[in-house]
Length: 87
Image 1 (cartoon, rainbow, N blue to C red):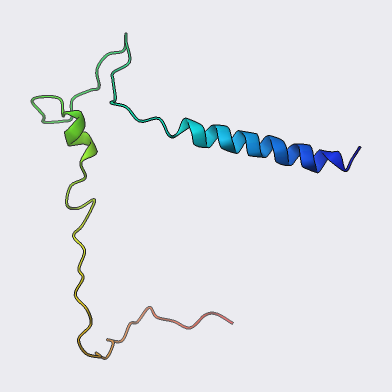
Image 2: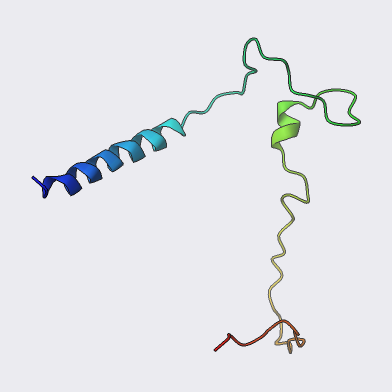
């Protein structure tokens, strides 16, 4: 009887994981909830931002990537905070 408990627990965990992964795969346009007031306007805004404006990251949230390869070896500058591990 006790040998079956880990098997049952693993099966329940697998079912819960499958349900959780299945629930996050739904994709459709966002719609406001019926009967709820619209979201509050940001401070200083004259109109509510659109869904596209809210879901597009700005340059600070998604900085440009630098793909410049290292052309030559360079000596690293000393770092006062680069301390050896304690012990």
